[in-house]
Image (cartoon, one colour):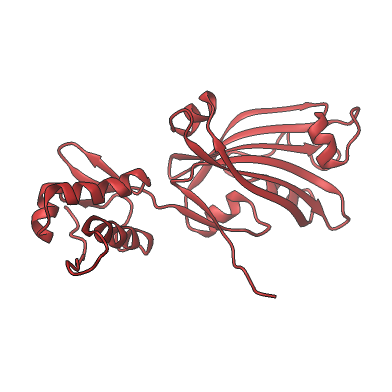
Length: 246
């Protein structure tokens, strides 16, 4: 069955018709009126229903296809895919945030090894070159779509990751189980282009923009317990923050 979205267009408005349609469809996806998996009619039928030209309807759909909210399927029509995950900038883990949002998630372990820290890890974690660390690389999925590439470094003295469930669980959950109480973190959010390997793993094209996050977390004793560098697909993920005037 197809879902007929409730859309109205104002032909007297200076806002382009395609943008009006795209904005209302995006709002319906974000508030759940259009759920992942819902199918709409093809562009021709949608255009006829709204009294619009086919190029206008095609342009509106393309806006949301480019954002990763809709997908065109030959012989099926237009289908809603997973909406963007909005993450508040606070001291939580990606796994915890996805669980709180009701999303199914799991991780593919790309690598877990014990070794010496790099110069960068020594700087962020306050370690000596002779110290030992766990180096963990994961690809995090949500609803079976690749969402984030995560690289984390944890001092061996902080926790043993060798037998930890890092596929269905999260790193912060493992640290909490080890008695580590994370209290504060330094975090930096940015963006850069995807390399060949990153693009392949995340299902993006080479050079596509990715969100970046670097974080060093500290426990209640002021000890640096984890340093992470993550890459996120911007079509599925966004950071949110509230700004307050002082």
